[in-house]
Length: 336
Image (cartoon, rainbow, N blue to C red; front, side, top):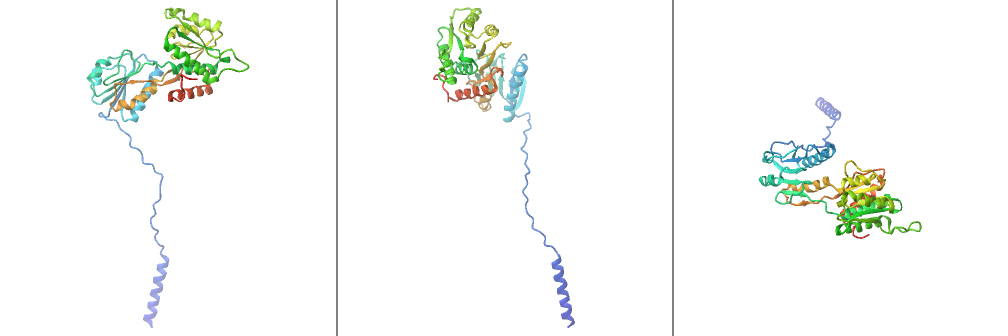
């Protein structure tokens, strides 16, 4: 009997102890938002090198923009980046050197490039240099229709009663194509430019300057357009756009659109429709680092030197959209 009672007591103690012990919870994985950092490339002496050559006299803002552009491209591609003012045979003897982008003046690329076949050179705005081998060149801007079309579009947009005009060299077939494109650009903006309120103009006014005419006499033709023909905005064909001439026109009160702006900037300058060198370098970069070269690189057009009081932000947006359409082929400069 005692044994039975003792057994019952032990069993009760055991059961009581078991109930008092909490069950250990099973381990559960808790998701976290911890971001694993991307490994950062630490350049070494063997990391590929890209060099930008800029002259000492380059305007600081322009120099900074070129440096930032090439530096960003180099960083993205895992390259080291250096800026130099000159280029010597010792520089290109560096076995890690892969890309050299050169601004004028020419350091002698035609002589240096053949001695470094593993290096790709891009010459920017250096005259009399032919693409070939490991030398690529930024092609000269030979486009006449696209900038003329956009000039006609912008001129029509900012000028009351579409009093716009163009000066062209006489007997130049490229200038005639540009004039037609200028007309098409105006029509693209304003439709047929015919309303019951205004019917004077169905095409932009223009004057032809004889090929034998002295550049010092160009201003007389501009004065005829502005004073006699009552033109408020002028687009001057690039071959005629001499600095002194543009400066003279800038004193008349007329608005000016061109493909390059002289220094100092003339009065009434609306916008420059110019090759976008930065964009061209960015487009050429993948082939340069891949070792592909010897080609002409065409600069896409861009808008620069904008006067926001003449070409307001909203109008600038329309101009940029039109330029984008021209570059993408959605708008043809040869048809209205």
